[in-house]
Length: 67
Image 1 (tube, rainbow, N blue to C red):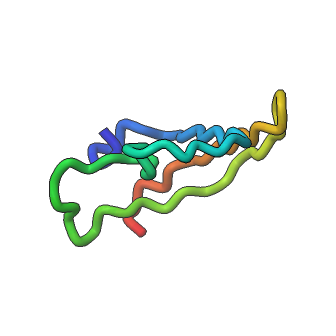
Image 2: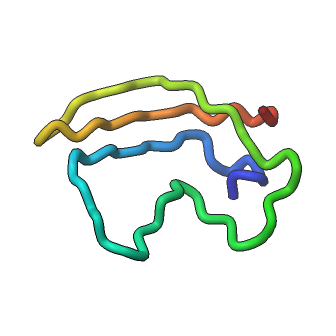
């Protein structure tokens, strides 16, 4: 969907917890294939807010020209 230009904004929540369990997913996006050479898209931060319990809420605008 990102590659096709269908996503205009991405919200990311950073929660202040530590998870030491095995098998945790570490990436925000999971490609199940080998990524193409120009797979990255630039993001522009449009808002940063601290919400309940110190959680950080980041909102990004997707720049559809490739990074």
